Image (cartoon, rainbow over all chains, first blue to last red; front, side, top):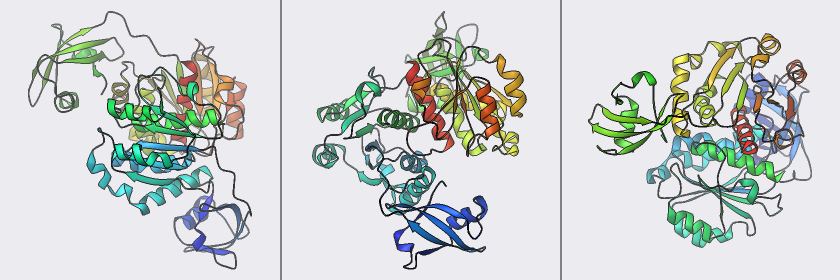
Amino acid sequence: MNRILIDPAEWAPDRTVVLSDRRAVHIRTVLRAVPGSELRLGLIDGPTGTGIVRSVSDSAVMLECVFESALPPDPPLLDLLLALPRPKVMKRFWPVLASFGVRRVGLINAERVERVYFDSHVLEPGFIRAQLLEGCEQAGGTRLPQVTVHRRFRPFIEDELADWSPGTCRIVAHPGTAARMRDRVSPDPAGVLLAVGPEGGWNAFELGLLESRGFQSVGLAGGALRTDVACIALLALVRDLQA
Amino acid sequence: MNRILIDPAEWAPDRTVVLSDRRAVHIRTVLRAVPGSELRLGLIDGPTGTGIVRSVSDSAVMLECVFESALPPDPPLLDLLLALPRPKVMKRFWPVLASFGVRRVGLINAERVERVYFDSHVLEPGFIRAQLLEGCEQAGGTRLPQVTVHRRFRPFIEDELADWSPGTCRIVAHPGTAARMRDRVSPDPAGVLLAVGPEGGWNAFELGLLESRGFQSVGLAGGALRTDVACIALLALVRDLQA
């Protein structure tokens, strides 16, 4: 953890917080904090701050918290449409998405997505939030990605996508495309909306519909990558171009 | 699998091969091959080729194989020194390294690597080979990375590193460095040797010794990433610059 994240509801009016979960274990056993130690804190979806350890016991850690008055600057805007991968992959992927500072994640359907994936526990809001917090703590941010699930591809693209950040540079990853990310993305204050397909790729209808909505195709250098690995590669390329 | 890989020892003088392991299952149930189907093949560390299915049964698939006379072109040279991650991470990471077409992988020690990691079964040659094959099949290549394990950091850097591809561009990933991959790597026929540290980073001695051997530091845009995610991001940036 590069930052301990506190839920605003946990914070008492006297500016203290008592932690007794995995964060307390981390503070005690990994950070080896003692009374007086200073820790990097954040309020979830709020400002960063500092916590001074007031007491440490086997069961709890008490912190006195001071938070900045201003929110930390947002990273360059990066939204992701991801064809829902199989649950085993999705489960591991939540912290990754948070650590890249993705703002919105839309999990969408596609022909090559199996319908049962949408019934998995890895899409339960409580599970998602816990996993996103882990990634946020790793990356040192405070803002959790907003996650939405869209079981029908065409209605989502035709009716709902218009509400997603107008003016972003729309990119669709499609294996075999010669154009690279650097040919499409410039450091642009309007941000990037990246669409990543399922294992096996988009079908022709899906790719056509995305292109009709302004998505430009890009490919990756080298051989075919597993979808989750390709998605990390694509997010890294966008972040590098935005910086 | 984008390519079925055959061990040269499996290939009979009559140019046929009989498969009865996970490859046979894949050919039967995923590719749904029937007699006459053509499959993309490769000889491990050898040429690509084509297999014509001669028979399919519940227990075995017989292929007639034709391989190219020339080896496929090597991808741009990319070698990796990786501070050994914990076994759970390393286990998942083998196919990833193969799918990026990394030529040599040296797993090295560092202060923040736990010694017990070197005794894990994920470093057994048979396990490594099976995992690398999976990544190679995914990426469509035929060449497996060469893997070596180096339990002592300083003797390796001082005495053995000289044997690693002289003339490559040497890069060490170090969080917080302002210089980016694109500032250091150009499309260079001599290739890239990338060093990626442990969770928590290199210590000052390790970074200094690497820099004394010509490694130049680079950082990634955005927040801190888990080491395996950062490594994928770095490999993707190198591959993009080499293409």
